[in-house]
Amino acid sequence: TKIAVLKETAPGETRCAAIPETVKKFVALGAQVAVEQGAGASASIGDADFETAGATVGSRQDVIAGADIILCVQGPDGIEGAQAGALLVGGLDPVRRADSIEAYAKTGIDALAMEWMPRITRAQSMDILSSQSNLAGYKAVIDGAAAYGRAFPMMMTAAGTVSPAKLFVMGVGVAGLQAIATARRLGAQVSATDVRSATKEQILSLGAKPIFVENVAGIEGEGAGGYATEMSDEYQKAQAELVSGHIAKQDIVITTALIPGKPAPKLISDAQIASMRPGSVIVDLAAEAGGNVEGTVAGESVEKHGVTIVGASNLARSLSADASALFARNLFNFLSAFWDKDAGRPLLPDDDEIVKGIRLTHGGKIVHERLTAAA
Ligand code: NAD
Image (cartoon, rainbow, N blue to C red):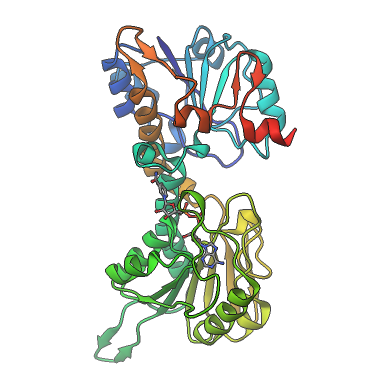
């Protein structure tokens, strides 16, 4: 079985879908790994590092030719030279990149979109959204601290005391939890909110203060697969009131709230931004999904009422070495879980929940029900 590792071509992409460690593990499974020249360069992995791990290094054409499995971080526009039946595994962005998915189907490859991995216990170690969100939550705090003109921890110095920063996290999923932990380590006073009441315990266990709407109908915002649902008008009004008073006293706010398949919920209005003290910072991790904050611009920092609003986009990329390592392990964990020793390659049963969740194309056709239903 030949595994190809592509060099990423998307602008700004710094990650690589394999690291020497996963190459070694694939080789141990009996696979032959071919890495495209320079694939790891932006993640501080040299071609020689891949060779030492047991891979060959070659041109794009050479690595794709005859490959049974093709690994990528983001799906390439086209996949010229791929053989029918090959597996393309990576973050394929199926909703926004319908044309590419169409092209994959025509080539006869099986395109496997890792971001649609079901959120079940068995698939936790294969979840690229979680692994990258963890890093993004950490980096959001670091970027927020860099944009903030004051210190995070309380400092008692001979010249007087520096008071601790107050940091508020809105949306306590994977990224939010990591943001809380990071901000606590830096010495900030941390509070957090979510619509899923299960997060209250998690916030407390990280030593932060939960800020929650109580006694409102439709309070339980947990829907299918542990994801949030859209909340009732009554809830949203109560949340806005509660949060307004709190936000006015915060120095840094990190927002991470997402609802699958919907635009990001608007959590901070212009008036609420104006209520914050000048020099405060908001980092909006939902910027790519429309933003949680009024006026967010994805990929840019804007200033409103003296408050800096960071429209965070793809923060994991700025930690390219760690992001690549976690991503590459997610891909290895997935493929190795389905590896059939006798066949010497992964076998993907049609009725497996994971396969059904992520397989977009098969046998020359688009097969995923989310895509066929949309068409
Ligand atoms: P996400 O990125 O979809 O959303 C981030 C957070 O925003 C969520 O906690 C959500 O509840 C919250 N949110 C949505 N609307 C909000 C609003 N109006 N106000 C405040 N907060 C709001 O979430 P995620 O990080 O992907 O995690 C979602 C859940 O899935 C978590 O419970 C997580 O533990 C779970 N999970 C399970 C697995 C697995 O079992 N394989 C893997 C990853 C995550």
